[in-house]
Length: 116
Image 1: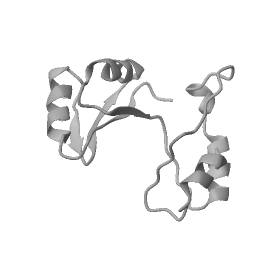
Image 2: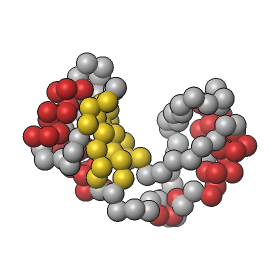
Image 3: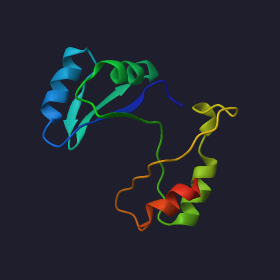
């Protein structure tokens, strides 16, 4: 996994300009306002700092990778090949709580969660 990755700072609709200003003032590298929040390139330290300091950010998401999956079988196969060991410890359990997708035929988010 690369040292930096995309970080998405989510906020309520209409608050993106305020979150952008707050991120700039806090010294985050090259933040850009987008629909629903702000994106920037950063490290895990930036994720932690954003969680602790940005008041306008309702959530801070680390986009650690992506892949294309058009159906559940493909999602399962590609999720199994993803290098999870680079970001997760094998001795610490985790749970998939939220799954999102864009322009896909996987219409049932619950099934997508179970595929992980």
